[in-house]
Amino acid sequence: MARGDVTSVGIMLECVDGFGRTTRLKPNAMKCNIFMAGVEEPDREEILRMCGFRQGSLPTRYLGIPLVAARLREADYGVLVGAISAKIASWPRHTLSYAGKLELIGSVVQGMECFWLSVLPIPSGVIDKIETVCRGFMWTSRHPPIAWRRMEVWVFGT
Image (tube, rainbow, N blue to C red; front, side, top):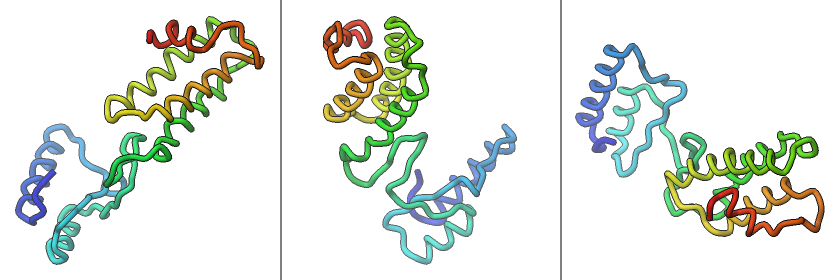
């Protein structure tokens, strides 16, 4: 984060360069974006020239989490639901015991949810979708032997 003027960005880039000399790590200009708001066009062009990064725009994703200018909508959480669905689809559904399924759901799905929750809240509608995916993996019949709400206590401790 820097003020949107050439001097501030120059100081920031000197710090990044100093870090690079010390650690031998440097940003990859092909993978980096710079985001600017309220910066006048001449300053914008000079900043882009100085840093060598592309100008990014919102929405984008950082570490898999969507970043948007406004509040996230339920549809923006499709990435999370899709990632959980893909992970669960890769597991051997018919060869695992109930305990094995329970352990996978508890450790992997809860880990993915916790990662997202460390950054932003997850709406209840999204949690319901995740529960539906987990329920579908856990029970192969339409009449499960145990209610999902009871399973949540074992899986998620709620």
